[in-house]
Length: 128
Image 1 (spheres, rainbow, N blue to C red):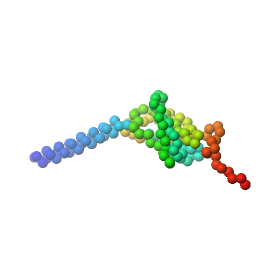
Image 2 (cartoon, helix red, strand yellow; image 1 turned 60 degrees about the vertical axis):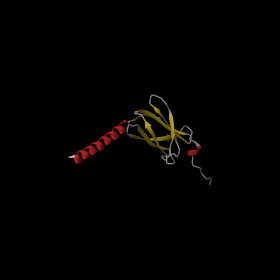
Image 3 (cartoon, helix red, strand yellow; image 1 turned 180 degrees about the vertical axis):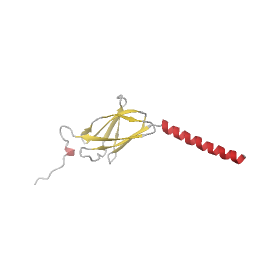
Image 4 (cartoon, rainbow, N blue to C red; image 1 turned 120 degrees about the horizontal axis):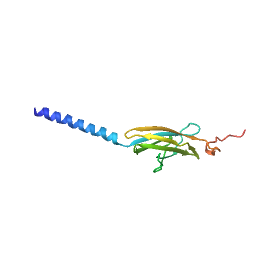
């Protein structure tokens, strides 16, 4: 009888800990991840990604890694606007990207040519 009570208590304790972990994940912050692509559809290393709540509150910036990937953690549930830049070229604003607690939202930010193409994106042509 005592052994059964100890086993039941252990199972109950494990179930409570698992339920608390699940609740903590649901209350946790959301994550926004993605990639920055250049006008040539290739990843842009170390591009800057600016983000803010869609209400325009608290703008922040992060940098992509050497493969153009970025991750923004600890975001509260909200809608966010994002924009990337690199090598003198910007993306359009990606507006109202919804981030939910405990979830990861992925986006692709594409840099577009300006009226004048930045020299960093112009291939050097050899004279014949």
